[in-house]
Length: 169
View 1: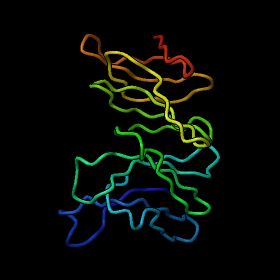
View 2 (view 1 turned 60 degrees about the vertical axis):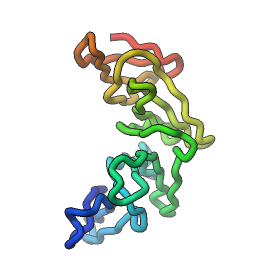
View 3 (view 1 turned 45 degrees about the vertical axis):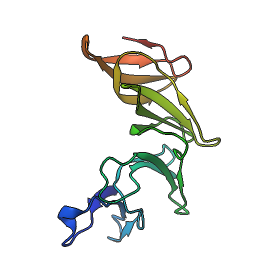
View 4 (view 1 turned 120 degrees about the vertical axis):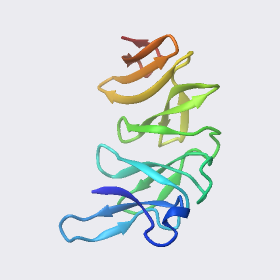
């Protein structure tokens, strides 16, 4: 079981340092997976094969306007890697495709678009474009299911082609 929680103690109300923990249901052991990362770590998602965990992370404690980065951890080795060092945008709504692909939402010029990260080469690709806001994305077979809203239409569910970024209701 993977979970998030804040440091417990007197600094609770003053700190935005949130860590991710693994809890072993067999032996009751709890392990801090993001120990030493001093910002806001949240929203962990496990890869389909259970080998990796991706999550959103802010770098600094107490700086709530910090960039939201995308990290991936190898759960066997504990190795962590940031994939958004050269990506000057926030990430959110992480969702695994296969074990090498993560889809996410990011704000670009006041619209929320769908992006794809491929782990083996670290390349981030913007998939969609338009005057709208995607709010979620979930890979299903060879396409993406996403919710999209705009000033002229309420939230609707769309099928998005991950190769072209085209969506259909």
